[in-house]
Length: 162
Picture (cartoon, rainbow, N blue to C red):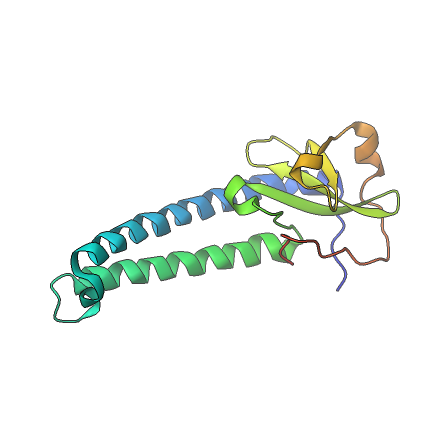
């Protein structure tokens, strides 16, 4: 499967929407964490008996489980439809740290435009195997040279959803 090749301007144009998506995902992760904390409390009080329909806290237990399930499904949908399907990738730790990679070409090889929530625009790039630690500052010269077509497949590196 061929991958999308982003130019810097194309990636920058997606950032407002992607910021909204990542904020929504973080909010949903907060819901999961909060509901999980409630389940832990019920588990300490009741153990496995909390799932018994006769238990006085069983309805609350089921409510928290359903809310977690809905939040997880929505997170998965947002990641699939609003991030991965447009060709953007999560580097390792990307979800936790608000990092996204945009595949591009530079001088005939694949590299990633690298962006982190809070940055106003694409300010860095890195080699496919370089990760966040290998970020290089974006310059007008680099930006001009990025996004040229190529026929090779983008390597599937560790930590990148595809």
